[in-house]
Image (cartoon, protein in one colour):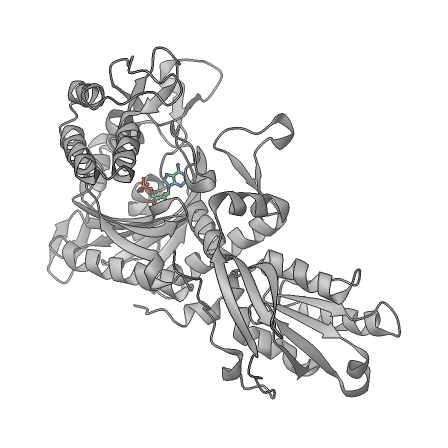
Length: 516
Ligand code: GAP
């Protein structure tokens, strides 16, 4: 992976009165492995396995104090970039439980499944496509990339025609073995629906079976007529939503990349039929700009058209991030045609149409969807941010690990640190802390040496440390230490609030985005 690059404007662009010294140092950065990210996330209060004291529940995770703050900041950024920057996008918050007929109409009962296969010797269950993909990757490592590519081509063809018998034959003929039993004693391949279901009400009857939503999008589609009416929307317009989704994933690995309970940030954009290609391109470009504005380097991102389209999609592209375990989807952009609204019209027997005054016509709008996985985005930020750095100072190498989160998303924006726990320094620091906490998530710490406190803040991604020392008592200036460069400057205490407003608010990212 390429080295992590700085994402903020250099401090020198600030209007405040300090000078940037030249750094007499040489620096090397190393990106982290997934295992290092997992350990760091647990150690520093970002993510814990769910039900940890019971040894964890597979593919479910809890956000700790710093993770919850990071996630909230990310969600606020997404929400504001959708609903504040676009006058024609509004947000909703639909319930997770919905009328089960919705999932008939959306096609999820019929088609939202993965092809599964069991090994009879190990009793282990696998996704047939994942087994084949892993085998192809293994062939590529053994200099048999061409054979791997052929295998994947055959697999995509079979998946397209839902030929499960053919998939089974492909696995057997390729000699794919169960990683546990090391045998090819496979069952037939069958489809396994990914939706979780539960019972609503007292009677355990079929009619009471309801599903935990596998995507938030349907809550938007079924509210299309309500929002159209209550907010007097005009096509093109969008409805955004952030919320939980649930999938009974069989291959649940790679930490929070594939979970059974996760969060989506989705926006459905309703357009006049015939204009969908234009809006598909618009949202592809806009969403890439969003990731770049967050500081994810271009080299780490890729737009990847879908090999295989979901049952509702006419065209689809993934935004992929280069995780330590490979280039993988973090966001999907889908051209969903009028598939969902039309089907809800049929199943609900309610007219779902829009009267377009510009062309004097009624129609069912087409939809472009942007669907970002909140947890996958958090994982990308952690992988991107966790840096091991060696700095050579006076010819001596010094190593440190720190978390280079975009300042606007960092759980804590600044730590207020009295140099010593005496001489009135804690009182002065508390005063600054009390002033700043009204506007920013700030922390106060007076234990341990200043070096240890800096190091701890670096590890949780705090972009600035503010140190109060004896000079502060004389001239009302403080030391501002920057996380990434470790540079220190003196700044009037009075200037802190406006400095932080410029550097750590969501606005610092939002202003880089185009709007409509
Ligand atoms: N409404 C469209 C939809 O749900 P998707 O590609 O299945 O499309 C959208 O999912 C995004 O949701 C993905 O790009 C991914 O970031 C996230 N996602 C999907 N399944 C996930 C899982 N099991 N765990 C974590 N995130 C997931």
